[in-house]
Image (cartoon, rainbow, N blue to C red):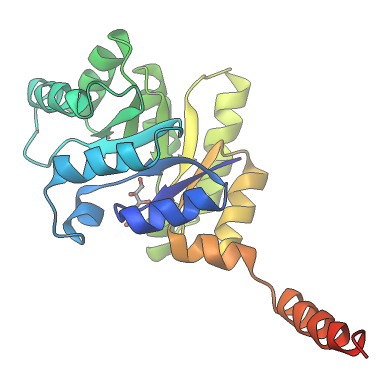
Length: 221
Ligand code: E4P
């Protein structure tokens, strides 16, 4: 399973990139809003910060409601950074979003259909030509449903029917989500930096380092 970072903060993206684990970035209007920057400028900065990653998701604005409006915005987003191939257009899981997904897929543009909460939505998005489908597990857990189970079912359906779209497990809240979606067959998890940090940590690792450091001192006498 590949790791994407779920943030619009360039410093955090660079930090995750530095530790060598990053395959992509996802952003959304709420994440960019936290940064107090112009949306297009921030997407350009991210693309320049991590040119090697396979995908940087940039979402069409909530003002784009029809497929035509979404396609018009997508065409502008594609031009950011001189038509960088890493730009992935993120589209909402609506009928208009699907129509725009099909149009862009036929033009060879990468797409990420977002706000997926059912297996049927994932199937439709994949059949509309989405490169990525993003089930939001944390938000399902928040309403007492089982987000990981949704990812498990989508992965099974995609396997049985040889569907090409990659599953991005999104709305990841903690390390156990990461382990479980990896075991479930998600191709990618998009993870906040705080959770990436948690993945690297274990109290026994810290204790082990402290013990080695203490013992190392005794080897100097
Ligand atoms: C994914 O692409 C979304 O940006 C993100 O994972 C949403 O997560 P949230 O439910 O924590 O807002």
